[in-house]
Image (cartoon, rainbow, N blue to C red; front, side):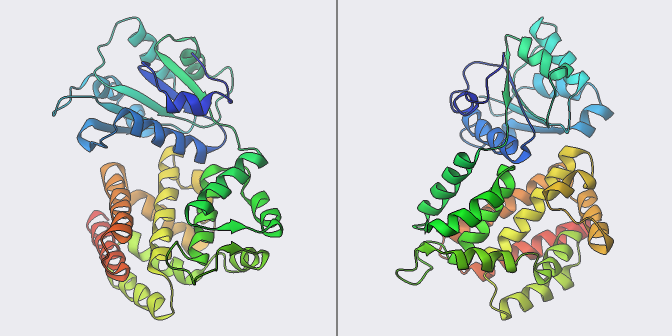
Length: 344
């Protein structure tokens, strides 16, 4: 079956009894966001033991891996979920879903497939749209009104609002990719300060704020921390972190930079290599490109997911425990750098 673009959000909010979902489209940030939302609906407890993640490389190297993952029973009982990330379509996934619907396979888990912009004639998309056990959910770029709503909701959650001139400057920069939009909104929130961190009464985002963020983009100093931290150079990462703190950088901003780089590594895995992440902001030239390529090789499968979860755990701790953000983020940087050094 298939949902229209207008029905997509509701289809994710109310998953129903489908066995599989294909979430696809040109806006990979929105694809990732909706897949994550659906996963939370299907596994509300976030049980990692009940979740199996597969990539395009996995099912190419082992065509039976999808069927095996879907048939495996939960060690703890209860629901299981398989996530498959693709850059395009997959004939083997299409064949599996056809055979599953015909009863040729047993499935204990439910399946979320993330993919790029699949055309109407793609075998996987056609299979899901014709299926009675699967749903295709398209993800097209947000309209200007959608993007404006996204900005307003995120800022309102932190007690901020945009003046009209600032809205006219900021919102058009975000159209086209939900993931990039959220990243830019996070930069704005960090620049202004989260709720409780700002001077009293400083709750309006001005055009000057938007221009200042644009002027500060591409901070080389931040790259000099993120690159060694995720490439396994423990000493360089530790020294870079100390320099950033001495220069007055916010530890939460440093944490966000690490999360953005992990997101780029995830895009590279989903797209089949480092070049696939360049449209999302991955380095294109020179030493930075080579370092990113090494990071993609280092952070694969379970190690990558563990790194991303560690970053999320640190964010939760910063927000909830009251412990110094400098220490929490510093611990994360050292853990990631040491783990990368072991995995090289």
